[in-house]
Amino acid sequence: MTEQSKRLATASEEALWRIFTVPEAPDSTLSIIEQNISQNLAGFLRESIVAVEKPLWQIERDFQAHQIPTDPRFVSDYAEQLMQQLVAHSVHTAAPSFIGHMTSALPYFVLPLSKMMVGLNQNLVKIETSKAFTPLERQVLGMMHHLVYGEGESFYKKWMHSANHSLGAFCSGGTIANITALWIARNRLLKADGEFKGVAKEGLFRAMKHYGYEGLAVLVSERGHYSLGKAADLLGIGREHLVPVQTDENNKVRLDEMRRVAAELQSRNIKVMAIVGVAGTTETGNVDPLHQLADLAQELGCHFHVDAAWGGATLLSDKYRQLLSGIERADSVTIDAHKQMYVPMGAGMVVFKHPSSAHVIEHHAEYILRKGSKDLGSQTLEGSRPGMAMLVHACLQVIGRKGYEILINRSLDKARYFAELIRQHSEFELITEPELCLLTYRYVPAEVQAAMQNASAERLQKFNELLNGLTRFIQKRQREEGLSFVSRTRIQPAQYHRHGTVVFRVVLANPLTTDQILQDVLMEQQQIAAQDHEYLPKLLQLARDSAA
Ligand SMILES: *Cc1c(COP(=O)(O)O)cnc(C)c1O
Image (tube, rainbow, N blue to C red; front, side):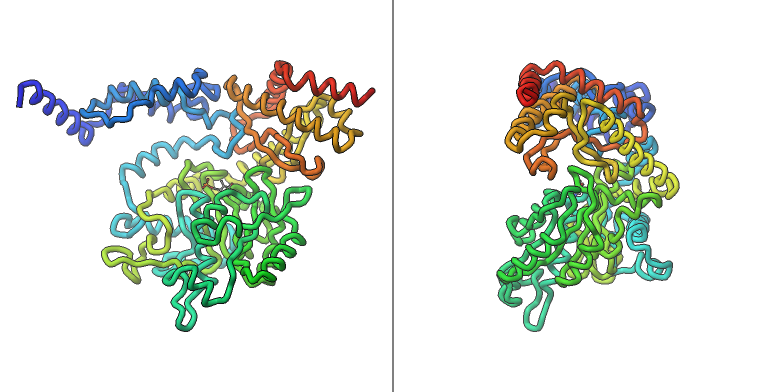
């Protein structure tokens, strides 16, 4: 070893030793980032959505190296780099003018709690690595189960902490929750029967032969979330057998259509394994007729799942929970705490009506997950899992039913206020009404609106195509300006003969979003529209031609 390499080895060892033993000094860059984030959640380092607009390709240049660095470094050096390259260009999802997606502001206490969670590093897969966290998670699942199903005290006393039973599964998000629910539906349908040992043991091919089906299907509204497609693929049902069913003019699934599709599948000997009701669609926020879907599931003898990943939190509001009426009849329900419950990402849940539902997906291993143990890992899709349930627990304890009632009501009322603002405005058009706290709209100049009133279907389509271009332009420019953010999607509204219509999409869950901010968003969009030289002139011309 040369003198130089000896010195290097020592420096590396020094750096390594420090990362496990010496905490950051209060004036270090890392501590400063941390303080900024925790003390200034509302303003998180800045007021706007992005600090400095830097094009993505420039940001990518900071992340070009493909080789893992050779030598350990001091954290202080790395933190400087982190600040410049990462923190400065992160999207400010907690900004009150960031109203385009389902991420919202977080209560300040989740930050120190997250640190505690990482520090304790419990693994929820088995009790040996999560003694107190497992009962806590079971309690959170019990509370969410009660929120949905409202069983009595003796029910929870009997099942909440029972080994071999679970009232639900905690997971990273709605995707895994939906997969888990459909996995259970599949395994319950194709259960062991006489010689046949069940689909979990023998596979789908032999299950189909045993039960004499030509295939399986899952029915859901055409507005169903794409995670259901992944589930259909993974479970061997096939994406084509996740059958999208038409919605009505309110974006709710049509029962007559679902019944027709089910009969058609049955005539081809394809078994309807589950129907899924959506309680709060991702694009328009509408709730399917859950009671009628429950009736149909009963009629078809199939599993009834409700995907309330986003809308489920509405159950916390006594004023609005009847919007989800019928959800208590579902066999399983997905709810994401990271959507409207003010918990950071990574907190999904599925709750089961029956405590023994998950038996059909149970798995055991000798070194952990032994039979009769209270390990949650024996009835979950995921393996090693962090103690995220603690953050849900904290929010439920600190915010409470009344706190959530206030927050949820405020979001829904704000959405109604914004809808009214749009309706009153001569240059905007409300496309979908907010049933929960999500709405869609677009910018349409007054003279264009007037011309569209009496336009033929053909001309209407022309107007819509130009408006689609204009909506895209406004949304993109608004995001680049960085003052506020709405998202954009494409839907097929009944009032426009199901033409693909590009719309602004707004989700109002941030308690810090004020009426003034909503007024400013419209004003900004109006100003941006005037900067468009491609679609706007053509739209105005077409309106004039129509009037002539
Ligand atoms: C967000 C969402 C999902 C997926 O949840 P993730 O947490 O993103 O995995 C599923 N269904 C609906 C209705 C959703 O809104």
